[in-house]
Image (cartoon, rainbow, N blue to C red; front, side, top):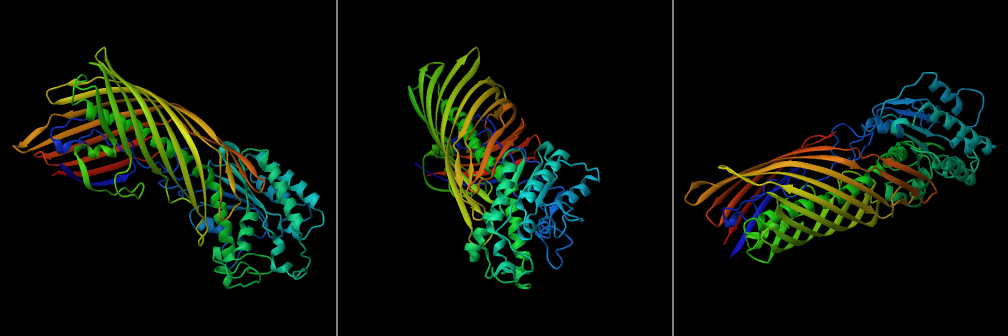
Length: 605
């Protein structure tokens, strides 16, 4: 006998619940689950990001509360008349809540008379007796005038270091806030220097650009929470291949076209289009560490799905039989459980998490009875998880897992000990948002999970009730890897290892089938699960770029509490057809509530 299954899954984000199953009709096999065996899409910021918006649903849901600005004409808000500079574009797009600028056109690091030097800009800032909000960000973007109009680069570099240290002393990087130091693009490419002397007194040297950037990077590399924004590499790529970034003129000033296809609005200043590129690079540096960490959390999600799908599959296939009925039994898990009714000749599903068609996650288990109350099992599972494609980084994790479990009934309880190991493949792709510019990077990882579960199954006049408790410890590793990026230099992320310990408590219930007619019955189910993170390591990550900059990030992963409520109903019509509806709602500390709805239909023929 064949079976046709049509399923529709609507997921607004969800978390998994534990499952028990009771089958009243062959057509219900694989459907009447208490709680969804499949889990939901990872949250956009599953680790702490002080710049994430409240209730963020995408990695792009980032907002800097106040952007403090120090610099020259590229950052001076009064200078950008007739166009929006990079900071104003960030504010206009909602990426920044407000701008507080001390930058002034002509600003330099080198001390000199007047209001323009960086030291005076910082004096003006400190005179306000500044206080900081948790999501404030500080950016220093200058050096153009030091390189272009200076004969004493040693004095400029020394002054930059001393003045930036004053900002650190004032507290701009406390409480996990960031200081962005923007390095220089090669301003020898400016029309005012081609040929040299076109713009009066403007005579930059590329070697001075390099020295300035190396000094800035050396300062950042020895301090925490300072990020170097690499404009040099970004615009080297633009100069080498302007069409890739939507530019047709990178050599001559064009005031009108500088809003669209020309880079320079005058002899030494970018127009709106060039500043748009700067803002795009700025965005990348604010979210890159969290993009990386969410890729890892997708691997953790695949690991959790394996464990919960095993639990669901065990109940479905084994609890319909007594342990001593057969020495060996096969059972499906995950999406493969839908095949339990027979061979599918057609399946269909819609999954907004991955955009994939068809049931693809799950596997097969082999259970061997060791006695009337004990069994040993081996399970293989394959899972794919896709990270939010709305950020510049989209990643897919391909996990191949092998698990061994021991089930034993003792002291009136059902015990299950599980050891699982997963080999993971992470494939990443970067979309910078300009033309055909893309990048990519791949790496491998692995994880090991040990869990102990105890469950008490109670038969009542209404159905089966099962309170349970579970303790899980996991170790996750990911290898270091390098990601190519269409705007910045190749970026290398160090390998990491983290450990998590989770305590789960819950109760599951399923009613005895209710006859609606001689040929139809209705089965109701429900469950409540509560998970507590007992311990959760932070990510300790080193990010290095090919240009020499390096910074170490501590990405905080605070302990979370998760509450999941699941409800479901299965309608069986004879032995050949079944309709199943499942709903799940999950709430987690510091996050919005997630919902999931699944509808499935099985027809046996």
